[in-house]
Length: 392
Image 1 (cartoon, rainbow, N blue to C red):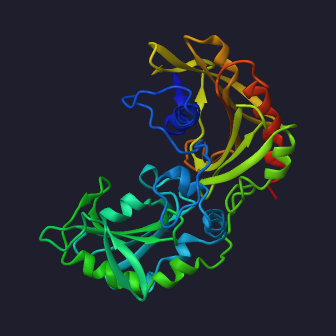
Image 2 (cartoon, rainbow, N blue to C red; image 1 turned 30 degrees about the vertical axis):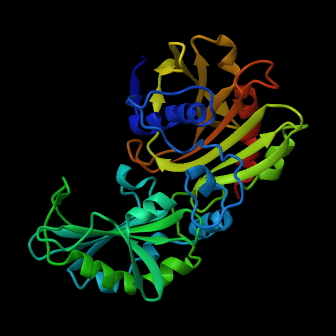
Image 3 (cartoon, rainbow, N blue to C red; image 1 turned 135 degrees about the horizontal axis):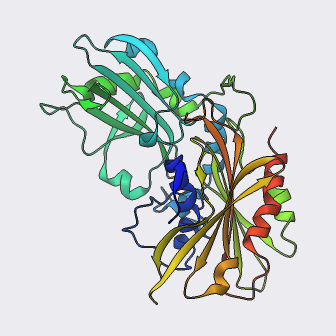
């Protein structure tokens, strides 16, 4: 495997795009023991029958009535503006808002932390994330409560037992299968060591009562991004009609959302078994620099084969990036069926920061067997400029 020079966290996510596409589209089974964590960036929303109540799976939540509107409203608001600073200051002195908390809560655009200091040299973290998957099975495992006229759910592991250091609540976004997650925790030092405090769930419940109306309403709020060109508050699927037009003879069946900045367009050829998925994501994270060639090899399928991913540097309309092609070792013909392109839309500042804006477009064909209507990498290279032109 070639050396990964920098931005390994983001590279793992980029590599996982092709992995997730294959695993979710029935083209093979990727080992769950792989060290690369699969993402939902390329999840292809599958056709689902009409249902009543909260969706039971990510596929169904992605295309549920109300999900697209929810993600639009999440992109249009500011999660930091939804946190109640005045109430939080009952615990200590305000320190800062943090929009980029790192791996524990995604890319930072749909989440925010409010930090207040504690008298005992510890601190309290009010952690909010707006677009978390919350399917019916997860909801059934938690504890329903009524707060200010709204049904919310307290995590099954959260209570006011002696030694408790945090409390977690979920505020469902209707029956979309998504929810806003709120956690209040007392921590110490950079290692975020839990610190027990008295009745964290009672305080979090009271805090939520003073905050929940805004969480439900998601009022519009423009975020001032002083870094120049940005993907923040932009719609990754704004060019759905134009993208569909680049597949002559195909019909769009759905647009699914797995995050506010992650969408997937599903298309079919009438009278043919082929299905294509175009997945698009916008992220704020670190840049990656990687040598070209093989970057990952994982077990795939029941025939002893492997899923191999090859990378090469690419450039689209002046933006540098990486193309990632997935190949099956036991079936070389499948090299044309899965491909992802990731571009540096805005470079990190400074170069080692986690504030780069990255745009990823992936194309996946199912079934992954010839004859192929097109090469996935050629099609991804054609679709990517269309996505770029739709960014205001």
